[in-house]
Amino acid sequence: MIKTYLKKLWRWRILIIIALAIMTSIGTTVALAYSQQVVVQASVLNIRKGPGLAYDVSAQVKRGQKLTVISKRNEWYQVRISNNQVGWVASWLVKNTEVSATSYQVARVDSNNTPIYLTNSESSVKMGLLQAGKSVTILYTNGSWYQIKHNDSVAWVKRNAVHVTGTIDASAQTEPQNTQTTTQTATKSSEVVLVKTNNTHLRQQPNSSATVVANLAANTKLTYVKTVNQWYQVKTSTGQTGYVASWVVSLQNKSTNNTTTPKVASNLAESTIVLDAGHGGTDSGALSQSDYYEKTYTLQIAKVVASHLRAAGANVIMTRSSDSTMNLSSRATVSNNQNADAFISIHLDSADSHSGATGITTYYYNKNRDTKLATSLNTQLAGLPLKNRGLEFGNFEVLRDNQRPSVLLELGYINNNSDFSYIRSTAYQTEVASAIVNGLTAYFK
Ligand SMILES: [Zn+2]
Image (cartoon, rainbow, N blue to C red):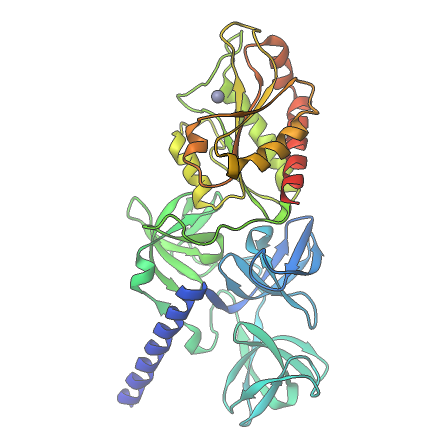
């Protein structure tokens, strides 16, 4: 009894090791242990044929639409859109309805060699045969057919070929025993977990109803301990341990600085934009004639830009969202770690003499990497009421340390009273935001 059990356990270990070996070579595919629903956040969301921007768009869905998650691969969710349609969506464009995760029925196969099909028809392609006693998760019922989870995809089985044995609950995690995989590997221990959004819950247990032990800020780095189902056990810099949902964070390799192929968004809604409000905290930046700080207005403008970009569906990460001190290299690090599609640093210029200069300048550092982005943005900024001073090479650390397409915008002279009256106005800030949205839209085309 014990021997067979150990044998089984050993066999599972081997399987897990093999699975991990495959995963690490081709990216991580995770079949979810339970069904989750996600809500579309972008106004229009592309459904793609595979987990990446390089795949063709097979359908589009609108904001507010709910999708059932079938599996997760890297930052992408495989979802069921309708009866027979399955596709992939970028996880940062949907909201995980963690708490309202639906429960699904589990069934057992009655007899050996039960066929499963591509669609709900016996004349469609056979995807395999299931053996008696095999447990399946039912995603959807249609007439005399069940749509079931099959590997990291879906398949159909005749309803009368299986019998329902229970339900899977998101919080209870009572999915068939064998999917309770706890993995601890040498590969993953060299990885860090990066928090993507503010107020990410650190929980006592690996499920969404467990007690929240801490709220983590965006860009917090955690030490990866192990994976339990779709949760990562992590350790904070203060030594606190807990669990974070894998779909709200990203795993990164500590030693290599993101050697994965840089992604290229094909539209604004699928892009990750890092906005950098210049200066902050003890660094006030330049001063207006009446001693107003540059740091105040760079943040104000960055926030307006962020809200416009988010409304357009972009995943926006701000290097700072309050009056905090942040060094230059860590601003570029945010861009590198997030694999940003564009990094935009927002500043206000200052001339040696008051009102000695006016206008907007677009700075780039790396001609090959940044010119297209700088040109796209500058073309739109030229429509603003302040003079357009055009593109300039700028040897700035936030651009120099950046590995991603990046620009630094000087959006007017703070010590020119005429420029400053624009800079501080809501109308101008909104125009800047629209120009950036339009510039990025053109950039990704
Ligand atoms: Zn500045």
